[in-house]
Image (tube, rainbow, N blue to C red):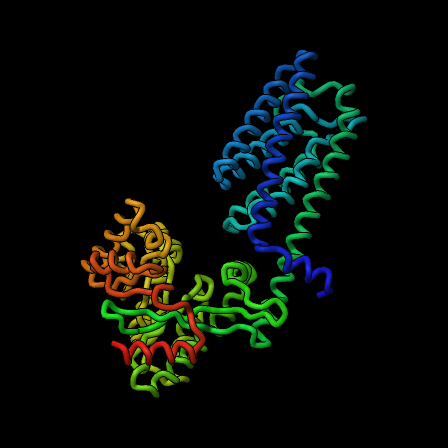
Length: 450
């Protein structure tokens, strides 16, 4: 990677956020152009008395306003679906009804379907694959069908040649301009994504990643375990926050080898702790991504690590998220049951932020619920957070699950959680995530004090 490109890459605070903002700006610009151009053409065709086209232009203007409002309210998926749905119908309708080709003037309106298909690749990048590719395929098939036929569902509504002849050149140049603009945006995204992939691969192969351990304490202040947290120390740019690189590891698929390395490192650390009487009873929690968990060899890999390091499987706890629970309940419960039969335990991370139902919780072999730090942060000042925290604690206790609160930063938060029946705690009030040697020192010091 050349120096200029690398510098541009690292000057970005978060490329995923940049992509989202770029896509959102393009969407807002498109909504504005639909409103302005729709208004101009509505006036033009109203003077000619062509009220069918005026009606189409009014639809475009209304859609532009609606897309802008939805984007402003951060209803991004709804805004995308509305924008692309209306544009597909309008472009297809105008091409098939008003822009029917003849011997002297070809059809040109359908050319806009090409940049629209390319735009869909950018707009729906983070959506499910079936949705993204469905929009793209519809755009391409519509383009091919309209380009290769003279068919029209409503003969006799074709615009006059005097209007279509200059419109053909305008449409051709405008469509080409839009196509190159969309391709430029896609190329920029691809370059940045490639940069992340190269850097993450280099970090994994050259040992830039480290695993730190954040202590987890019980109600008596004893260290009863830790959460393994990935840290990236770049040789030139120093520490890189997980929130900056984890999304790109997920996006590029590198979260699978990185997650496997973290799990391997955690198992090796558990083996080292077994040689110390104070540390041998500690549990170690490891976050598992959905892509990692969905790997066909995941169960086999975990079992192989347990055997290779000769650790007690009950000391290894895998943390899953509510998103995983919602997406594939059957496969999730099967794999969890298989690993639980080996002695591995499971925790549901960030509980309360997703959409899992009580029926899901009842079917999963969970051992622990983890209250998300966003609720703990304002539990003393927000009545909704207080109610959620109390509910989660009560739910966990009634279901026989251990409840741990993460993100505990003040003594007042800690006392509230204690009074509410929470059994375990994790947060900066006690300690940040520590390198292995510092974690060992912290644990031995707490053991001596308590």
